[in-house]
Image (cartoon, rainbow, N blue to C red; front, side, top):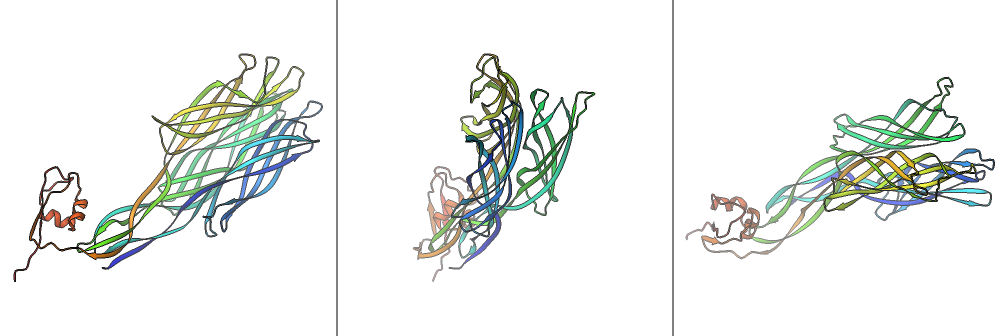
Length: 487
């Protein structure tokens, strides 16, 4: 028995892994920390034998009150190198790493304050993938398209700038940037990414602290020869510069925000292989070797906005003697949880609430507002941008919070198919010596199932039984004719 096999070769996403690492920064001059922020920025990543080594820099900023109750700020950068262990990693693979500050903690030791950021790394590994599949031979074959997603990695940079006015601002103490992608369009000439960056600013406004936000739109266009049908995008802020000018006559402060952005893009292209999903021989038993191929990418992307209100949880108590000055470092995190009607994006909106006590001293309180929003998807990734968060103390000791959530839900596309990789000939089948056979097939059989049971090609079955309908109905008869030589 002769068989023919072919080899598929392509570039695609191999698997995903993750890791965590802690980065610490020491501030010797800080006494009472009010607001702390850590912004990780990736410099590079390399795949080796059983590990991915990634490295970069974490920019720490801290707002604090000194012994004279003056609000001050301090900034430092810390270089880091981390390793993610995974035995599946090999040197020829390409690693895409997305960093996030999952947790920030502050502790006081002696005369110094230590800030520790726990960095999470979501790592996708890409590389060459190949496999053999049965393409032909002396067999009756059932051919079906086997869909495979191939990947093309591209990246690009862009710079955007925005001017706006704020109230009286004495000094910018801290700022944080969060990227929200609103649209991705793939064409024959490349990919176009649109979105907005939420810039949150904490500033000194006279004798008090003020916070404000600005949504800065951006567009990144990356040329590519790959005809990708879908794109998985990660956009990061590599550098942010804020410039403030005073306009004392109008009591305003013109601000200019300049952002340097970087985008990593994976373009997915669907390829159909003319594969064999089943086979049999008319005269011999056959043992088939099969493989199940699974490739993943991205599907439809939907967006919606939700306003959430509720009672916030606080890291320390408040009362009516406290003055609420500012809400800063607004952010959100969420996961998709399936339910009977689809899924829900369940998470929490987080912020630092800055209050001033009756004695004039300030303190920072971590505030969290849980949320649960219905989502029309079952297997998807959800990204949430929290903006416009406000806090009020209607009842003593409690904070009612309100926040706007901009949600982006990207469905996961998974192609899974089983196909035949090879066939091995077995023992000869017993020959039937009758010229005509009548079979009573099982109800519900399709043409292929019936043909395989009779060791006849689908064309032979339909030729002998014109007008037969599938799936087979109860009581139908199938006739098989065999050519006989009369001696």
